[in-house]
Length: 115
Picture 1 (cartoon, rainbow, N blue to C red):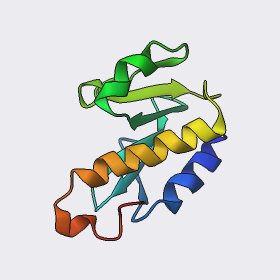
Picture 2 (tube, rainbow, N blue to C red):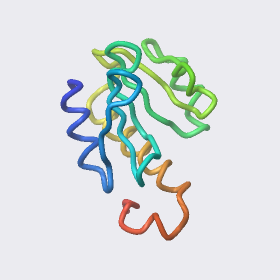
Picture 3 (cartoon, rainbow, N blue to C red):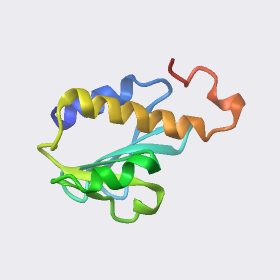
């Protein structure tokens, strides 16, 4: 996937919006300010949240590393071209979105949870 395809996919997720933060970072968030992905992270990278049970497995893969400043929250980062297939990347971005949504108060989750 290209960075533009990643951005378009992220914006298709329920309640997602895009903001520019910290200079030129394209931040994708839900429920106002809860980030689930960052494009142009430290250059031309992509960073997003993964489940804590998957974190160590992903950072052991070539081309994937703990995201600086965000690794304690189980975020990974990678540079373009991304070291995984399009379907796997879409799945991980969807999971990142859903991990963030699951931590919202129940009343704010309405309409944001996927089946």
